[in-house]
Length: 247
Image (cartoon, rainbow, N blue to C red):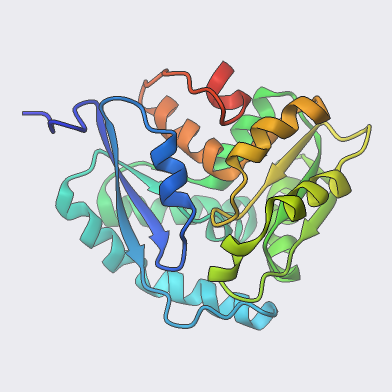
């Protein structure tokens, strides 16, 4: 018998315990018959104030991944979603593939990642030259540039907000994000990408597409879009950007 609420699809979502944005973002993009069930990756030391801190944060994520997968699998999800983006960019294209294999080995399920979702969204929009906004330290930005570069995209401008802790990412104000988008935009930029699932960008990206007149890809909207479309769910959602509205 199907789940009474998730009768179309149950998503198992992996998210850091420090993340306060991705869960409500996914909830506001909900569609009938699809439910999201979160497994929280325990972050014991949330410092990411420099490159070493960010590396240590990712090491914690990796150490907790299998047990988090095991925990969320007890609700018998149909598909996995990665509710953190940094790990999916780390190590470039092969790093993302390795992560997908790890989740499949742990769960037996396919997984949506922010990195792959952004690739699909940029390809769909015919974009090659992009501007990027992240909450990361330089080491994180370098991995984002590497991932997109290996796919043939040119990161013409990137703004890393250098958030000092994992929780503080969610404290970034909308006016800061608006300024960051303008900073990485120019007439020869085809599309803008926002990384970092704890940055609250979904609503702003929808608005920014109108005043910048180009695609603005918010990582949470792109990842949710990939998860839905990979599973044949074609519902259109207003107010969260052109991906879910038009594609």
